[in-house]
Image (cartoon, rainbow, N blue to C red; front, side, top):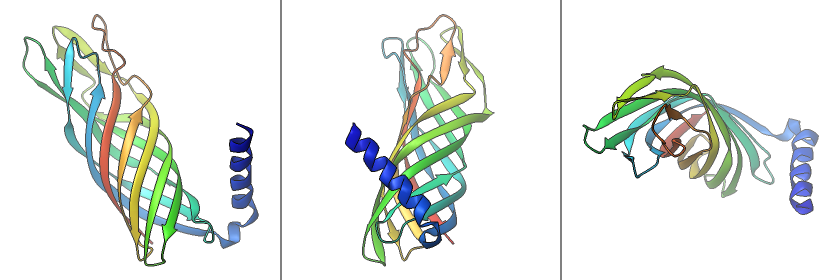
Length: 197
């Protein structure tokens, strides 16, 4: 634990000590979401739905070590296809304003670099239905979400990034009065592209 704390402090000091040498870029990020919700499978079964995400991003990188941060404000559509016993399938889509902040490590040659990223995100529900009728009960979308991101990708000529990201929801995103949903946490993959200026 002390080694991890020491490493984090060293990284933070590097960002404070050499801000003039860091590379700051702005960009636009977009992609396709393939999302679902982790539910109590004894009552409901959830399948994937396809949505999208788009929004501005910012990235800063220390040139010599390739470690940096990226952050974005993304309009992101998530949801699930509900399969309830004895009723019709219900497609649920909820729109969020997601704010991910990732630690990113780039490595490779200047024209083509690979990257690994990870970090937390928070999300605020901004659209989509709030209440659905499931098995005669009201299922409600919550207004706040949070979780962790894990990503891998490539950067081409310092201006185009393509990647795959997994979002692991940590908060319950849906509730029902009389149904035990078993947590109802968002989960999903996204395939993204970003143009940096």
